Amino acid sequence: MSRRAFVTDDNAVNLAVASAMLKRLNWTVETFDNAGAMLARLEEIEPAVILLDISMPVLDGEQACALIRARSEWQGIRVIAYTAHAQPEERERFLAQGFDDVLIKPVSFADFRHSVGESSAGPG
Image (cartoon, rainbow, N blue to C red; front, side, top):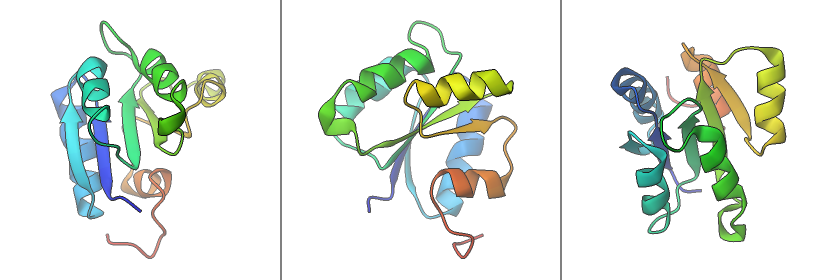
């Protein structure tokens, strides 16, 4: 399995936190401050995991997820909502829209590791 992850968030602190957690799990990480740049990079290289902030200007995480899920060649990518939207109905909506999981900010390392598909025996 590829160990490449994309993290997309318009907040620099959130990018740094997610990147640090992924690197601690031995992932190669690319960060993006907007979904348009991430989608352009996705045309060049396919990560195993994409973390998408829901609330971003111009193209939000829900719209970006829909664009990813519309492409058959990208169906194997694990797409995770990385958000502060914590209501149960929001979580259900995100999963129904094609996200594989939802990480609620602030996120614990254990939740993060589980969401990206790491076993509890992994690093950390």
